[in-house]
Length: 96
Image (cartoon, rainbow, N blue to C red; front, side, top):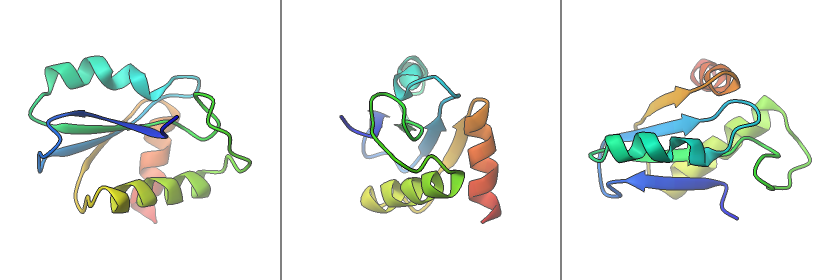
């Protein structure tokens, strides 16, 4: 199972990184993606969610995961949205 889903216009230069709340799955952003078709939306599961096995559930480990995904998809610039702990992770991402 993939750690992230890509929704919307795959080749868009307008990218949104979406982080769900604790207990939610990345698929919660599928409905939003249908409304924002001109964007590429990358929805990422939190560590240990959606049956993804991970030993370390720390914020720093998750920040590294976000960086790996951005690198893998060649994303140098993006908007971030998050709900609950997703917002907290975004703050940590920008403060590093």
